[in-house]
Image (cartoon, rainbow, N blue to C red):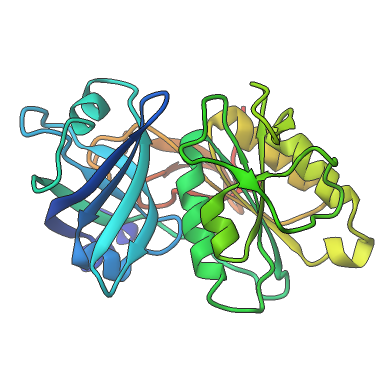
Length: 295
């Protein structure tokens, strides 16, 4: 029998025949897919994901984090990277085609209004939830988001020099995401590949530069939100612990059903009553970073 967490999703996850509107390719097998899916677009929240059928010949769907939505226009946008048979098949889907999609799925990020300085950290294909969250934050002047992104392949956009001054940033670190600049949100990029204008190092090292430049009162206003590969998120959790900052992470796991039935995407979470196995799909994908058993 399904538990209450699975039951509560029954009226919030929709099955739609999503029409491909645009499908753009970028270096290193990266793609930005926009589909018409009005039910998902109207209900998705930062941290939500969708479960897409990549091709009729493949029975297993693939989970993709949502990067942007437009509830009025009814579209949902994803950034993904080709890593196997499913995403390779998905990369061949053309505008005008339709694909079966379940969404939105998952627990979203929860904001703390007492901490308006929001530090968003996205690594690789963990960038989309941070863009979605940034888009949400810009709707209210209360929030002061800073977005740091890391990638070891070329970013899926042409970086440009930021017009925003960020405390603690090394002088040569000026590369930013144009979309965020257009939204009046400060961002910086990190890599180990020597891309122009980017910080040479890990995203957590860049975050330390920024945090160290804040005074004690300013740091008490900071909350951290992150998505990316497991080692990066473990490092982000350690970073947040070092500065005593609340931190939420969106986990990435392989999953089959994505609606809580198969329990194939479980992770160990420390709860008030001891360690427990939680499903990334419906109990997450967003968790308190300090509750995740990173080992």
